[in-house]
Image 1 (cartoon, rainbow, N blue to C red):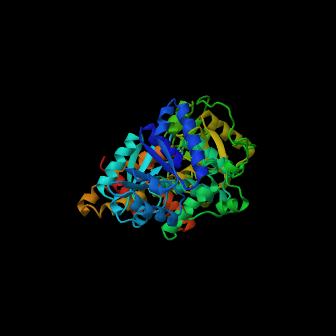
Image 2 (image 1 turned 45 degrees about the vertical axis):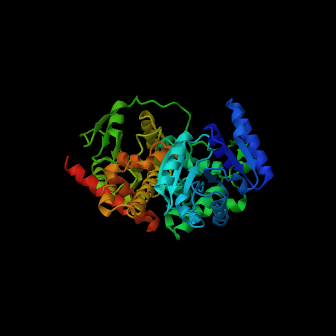
Image 3 (image 1 turned 90 degrees about the vertical axis):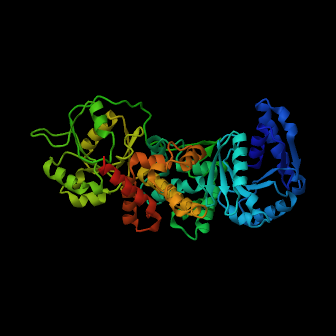
Length: 528
């Protein structure tokens, strides 16, 4: 990481002192940097690189970026030395991804000049830098580091000193919920990755990404967050991670993690989605779509595919299928029960399952074998549709599969479980982002008055640096605040309350700020 940051500084024309206590590490860094500069036809910049073994040799530096191992004792020892070697006005920064900047700064005589400057790996490629404000970091220090990040051709986001800062904190549910779904037996890791990629638009699923990062590194970050927050259940490591560590299956770097690798590529992975090209069209017959808002775009897609869409059964005519797209708070139970009583028992009822399980729905009907669950919230966003394993007869099942293919969606099947895959992962990411927003409001209250803080708590102002950080630092298809707006705060809250009611764990408690935004959204909708 230090080599990558040094390379970024050299690209910007800076004089760079690269220090490491181990000569072998410096030799490796030198070869890496020289090779990259040659590829970019910038070999002349190499003469600005000074390789040094001792911290005493970096005294000319105006900004110091520490990138040692994620160990608090090691970092505080380094900063005590840096405080003496590089007197003010030099700025001292740490590239830590999860440790407290305030605690590191406390080891110095001048904590006002200490901040976080967190780059993302690979540093020469990824455009984001988190500039972290410790409890006593001065505004002058923040301004200098923001300007430096911009000079490095990076996008800086300023964040408070909360555990994990922005990216490593908000990304926790991406891994944590995927591990929980796998551990509960609701889906395989290959299925989860394919749903996240083909349904959610992510470049890489959580298990592929854990393998790429290193399961040991990912687990260490989770443990650090868990310990720093005194056992916050949202960050609790999963036993599957610990099992992988015990096995020595650390990911791509050792050839085995959740996947097996050969020559750096995944081998023998099971495919749950066919490779056929999908297009909308070719449908015929009538499809019923209930009232409700938990499957946006479904009716329009059915019409585009050639189906006639109604909400009430037509006399003497059986529909192809009936979709129930209401959430619990929109009276899904009433609608599912009504359709069950008024449709021939051979007609499948396909009900959205983001805040209800098939197990619950079975108590509302006389013909439970006709029920199929589907992910309505994310039906319109990808090339797949997540279905809960149906128990309908095989011939009817094939008809339903054909219908989804005509709607341009390939079915992928998982077992019944709360909030499926994408609603569970993404709503937890949104919730974590709003928890972070709430914590940052608390930090803000230490610097400005309460009235000023209240202006930052309205959901209309929530699309902010958190979204920028997650899009640039993790390459998410949307920022979490943008997702919250597109899904709707009340629906996000409905998914989280459903998870909480099913598991009875504080892990799924909704942020009080999310509840307030859901109320604001409801009032806004009533006033339209």
